[in-house]
Image (cartoon, rainbow, N blue to C red; front, side):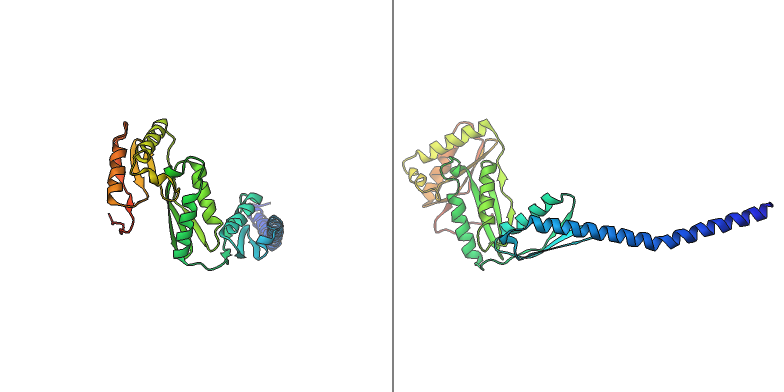
Length: 264
């Protein structure tokens, strides 16, 4: 066989192989699509089973190309987050779009902010950490933003849980900072609390847990938050905190009832 004949035969053989491969591509694509579709259907069925509860009765589940989309409505924001958590627990590597809407009662931002603020202020009473939590609540278009400081994770988690399960809340943003663990700061917290609440003109603030002077301590730096009845009470509280040994600095952010908070 000449070189030319060999080359021609080789080229012809390659062409046949290319034609065969190209001919198989549609079949391969169809098989892959079928396999992907079957997997999507299996995942969809699994998530539907995971959400088999009356609180998710209006939730719709769709899976396309391995991406899960949750739509429909629920009565509480907590259920929306729970639907995501259950889906993620079922298929940890699956991308999830949580487009569920909270369709509970319509509550004005002002009412939500007032009621949530009060409920969170009374939260954790009896655990000994109430006066060391300074958690702020802001509501806009049904979206609740929690800010400020919590003494430890259970205090933060409890505040978030209250917001998530409150009727009318559409979403919750958790910006609460948990104060670092520090024996020195714990000593200062207790000493500042005793110094402030033990003073005759200030001990009435310990009666109602919604009204106490909130004490935050981080690395010896003390911040006072809350509402007092007079400018004199605010000043005395600051002085009493400054007198505690080990305190590096006191930021007195106490507000006086009836006065507008000054912008920094």
